[in-house]
Amino acid sequence: MKKILLAALAALILIGYALATYGFGLRAESTAKAWVDTLPNAVPYLQVTRNDYQRGFLKSTHIVELQATLPGMDAPFVATLRDEITHGPLPGFNRLGVARVTHTLVLPPKVQQELAKVLGDQPPLSAVTMLKFGGGGSTHITSPAFTYKDERGEAAWQGIEANIDFSKDYEHVSYTLAAPGFNAKMLDGAQLQIGKISAAGQQDKMAQTESLYLGSTSVSVQSVAAASNPTTSLSIANITYNSEARSPMPSFVDASGKFAAQNIKVSGEDWGAFEYLVSAKHLHAPSVDAFARAMRETYSASSRKPQSAEASAQLQAAMLDVFKKHGGALLKNEPVIELEKLRVGNEKEYLLLSAAARFAGVADADIANPMQLIPKINARAEITLTEAMLMRMANKAPATAATGNDTLLMVNAQVESAVAQGYVIRGDGTLKSTITFADGKLSVNGRPVEGMR
Image 1: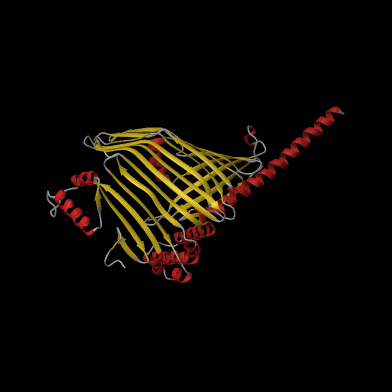
Image 2: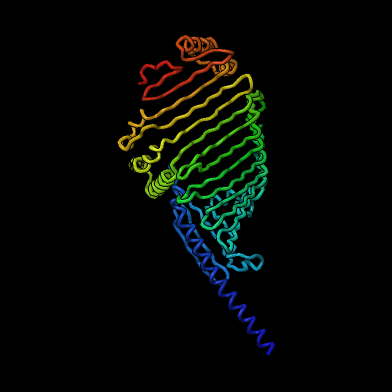
């Protein structure tokens, strides 16, 4: 009797596992197909030419052929994504989950032949996704390290590793990326070195939007150094980019991006640092989302047509229609675009620029005729340039037939003229200008610029 009960229990477990595996197989198939359906509209110029899902009991195979047709390409670029899907609840009998998906990118034969010279039989990119019971999952991506040497020189890439975590329906996405770097040295003396690269971010889909995400992203590159010969070189250290999108009030988004680079040296000469901070505020989120979706659909539709002058004209007309349809609500809410800071140089020699622009009083009639939007722009820019920086740039300017060796004299004469006319304010070793555009009129330091009314 005991043996019969144990056998019945084992049979129930096997039947339950079989039913669970079948159910998880259906769920994995639904997830995979839904993801592929989003590709054409999510990625402009990309078409899915094959979507073949071969479902099995414990495993399935999903083959997706992708075709990219970019402007200027003589022929489409075709690649195939091959997914081997092992069904849960114990995919591969080593982890718990709905499914384990092994992604393989199959490139065109000619591309594979060229990559084989560098990678051998290693795939250029490998990825594994685990789909979780509660929805969502995680993807681990790797690219192999390699060294390559031929008659021209040698190169070494240290590989790449990335992780992506996503929730159900991609409501939340977080990611990290790390690449130790790259270096190449050619026999003719040219060199390129890229230091450690890292990136991280987390995004949350904004409520009641299709593809608008809030959150932050950061990217850093330890250093970049390039030289074409011993006397011509460029080096930059501590390159960073940070972006953020947030919603300070319902239905509106503020977005900002900051780029910075330190220790910029050209042929051994120090040019200081570079900083760039730009923001867009009070963006009407539903309008941004609708505008972005319509633009993706327009690009996607144009990629399916043969490239020609007529097709290009049709694309421009379609883009204008998108603007007329969705741009009105965006501009009528008076978004502000601001270049909060652009600075290049060091403490004593620098160029500093800040600017802001917004649309005021936009009406539906203005959207129908975009040229009527120009008088609705209110903009202001402030520029500060040290005279030391100006002289340094003038000294670097190549001589021409018009300037000969008198570049500094010509620059000084132009500055004196601008100062005399009030377009430049000189003081404490700096040259400053404030430029405004309002009511269709342009002025510099409060002086109207003739012909710009």
